[in-house]
Figure 1 (tube, helix red, strand yellow):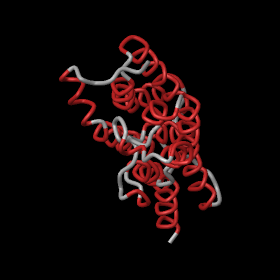
Figure 2 (cartoon, rainbow, N blue to C red):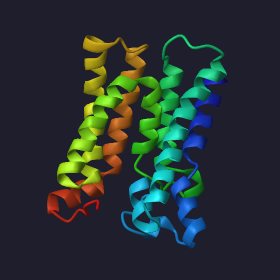
Figure 3 (cartoon, helix red, strand yellow):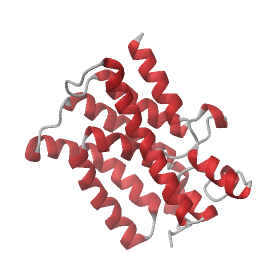
Length: 204
């Protein structure tokens, strides 16, 4: 019963479409009909301004962190990361990408994944953030930075565990990192096609 509660609760939390709600409240528009069609911070900032984008980023990251906190709270104790927590991590990111409230059409999972791994592997996430910021700074492609950062996350978790600081429950954490990275990259498949064609929008 507890695993089901954790997984379903994380999915429903991840499904809260903050970007959609912010844009709808500010302009009455449907963010899914604008730009990339995603409900994430980058698309929101293009439609409703940088303040709205930052708010979306923080709220989406917050629900990722909250899902992990919820998983730990339901179990009543914290003794490293177990498979239930790992399942919650994937569930909350999946909820953001495929929200039940919006016909399973949501964002790309990056900010929610950040919230998840702030809790599960903060040192590795800090290294990933350097990759993301560097790529976006030099190329101005947020999508390319997001894809590269997602792909790098499992590698940096391995490096953290081996060289810097052991990751509690490293196997479940690696499972969730690989799964989340695969999902983020999958959700960027249209961006990848546009990057290859030289038609991707740059962030300004």
